[in-house]
Image (cartoon, rainbow, N blue to C red; front, side, top):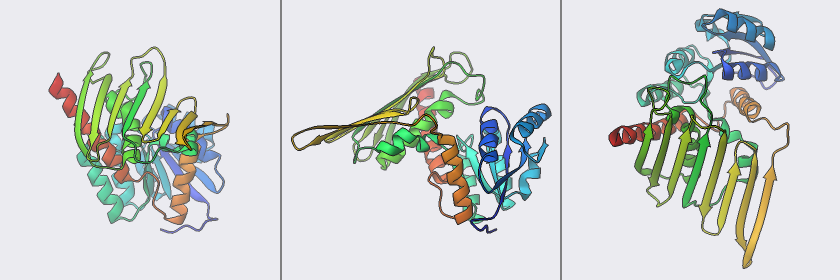
Length: 311
């Protein structure tokens, strides 16, 4: 399936919960895009989001999305593999919200299907598009990284642990920044308000000597997302939530500091979706392909295994 740069893309959203609604509203504002379909198992929710976003049609059957050019899959994680696989087989390009799938095996199957059917297949690791992170950049050859991602108890994503709900974002960022094989994973965690870990800490050692310390909690009284990167002659601190960043480098025997604050109208999700649509039109490889989602999920599985071992 090919699309010219000026062709109107018929797109859809499967899953009209909190994130799916956001996807629908972003698509509705994109130039050269027609939001043709919103799907949700809850008919009232599908209809409400479709009407709010001005979608042409709504449905409770995701199979109706098979005739579209591109689709966002924002269902519960347990449904990602089934729906995305069928869409790929039908020739649809897909953007799957994180995590890519519920298991490593499902993620591998999705990667293979994307290759086999030559589809644009992207994972919604939206922090890759955080304006603070993108504008300031990182440090070359990071040696130590630490991240903290905490939030109040949510009314969503309770079908997965905090590792797949929150920590997966930082696993993806750390893997991208370090770009080396994971040598060892140590972790602790505990269920508190659900039957799955709601708080976890992981120490990840890489083959090149770098180490990352990653903490995540969904039982905090506040929300915070911080990433710090340390490298020879360089330190970067990013407040991913406030979208502010600071970098300090050794320069000419002293310290040079740079800061960045994103404009009030900066929108990482809109940037992510615009990038996905550009890839659909140009057939270029996405910034966050399925393989990146698989890599993050593989480390997440090792975190889960280490948590279980320590209980």
